[in-house]
Image (cartoon, rainbow, N blue to C red):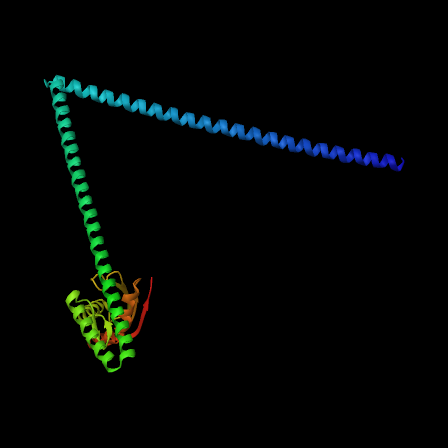
Length: 281
């Protein structure tokens, strides 16, 4: 056999193997498709059978209920009870009960809507009042800052006369603070948190501290001066670490200026202010 014939024979052998492989693949695919179809039909048949059984069970139950109802009706008829009048009375009572339930439900819904409306109105009013207090407080602090700048400028340009004018401005600033809002106090030209608020804050911390172990809690401040800020406190025994968080730069400035007063107030309450931080939202 020549080389060419050998190559042709080899090629025919390879083609035959490829054809056989393709045939096997097609047969396997056909078998899988057939299995899927059979399985699907089997599942459908099972489902139909279950549905038929369910329907039969329901029909039997209905027939049983109908028989029981008929037996009861016969029993009532034999006992001389006017079944129609009894059914009419039962239907009347059922209608009355349903009407009463609908009326009560409607009344509850109306009451709930009224409560929601009142709560919404209260929230709107509270928000307006809060916005007004914040605006008033910011205007107040801005006025204080302007007076501080004017006092410092006057003192630098006019000598003794400027210092006297600055003293008068400082007195006017303090009088305006006390008379307008009674929210902040001035000591040595520095605006600080009122001692009453500091005492309340320290008292709240003292009530929450657990001397047996580490405690963490947060106090949200809602008064006119510090509203919208919060104090995050962690305590280890009687040692306090506090972090003030506020989006208002003026409130952050008040807390920074009052750090010494806070430390002294904690010491007086038997607590030790180990660390104090002020940060923004």
